Amino acid sequence: MNKFNTGVQMPVTITTRVDDKLAKLIDKIAEKEGMDRSTILRRFLIKSANKWLIEKSLKDYEEGRIKIGL
Image (cartoon, rainbow, N blue to C red):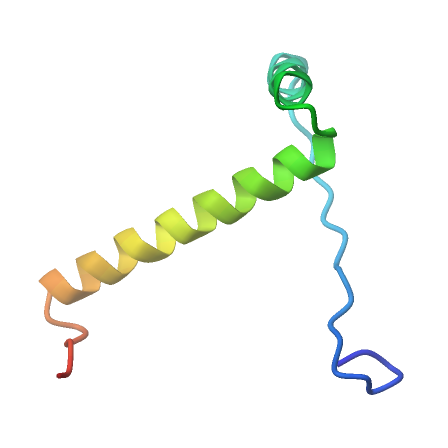
């Protein structure tokens, strides 16, 4: 919760450095999609985090660390 206790989560700023080639590629993708760099990066982060979570869960299931209950 935020400091006003409204139940609304405030966005968090995350900064990172990337090489020039990657920055240009991100900008090219953003232009083709008609979006700004931040929106494209958010979408990439969401997609990558979800993919990681699925792969991790499958591995944990295969190795018997988690079970699917019915």
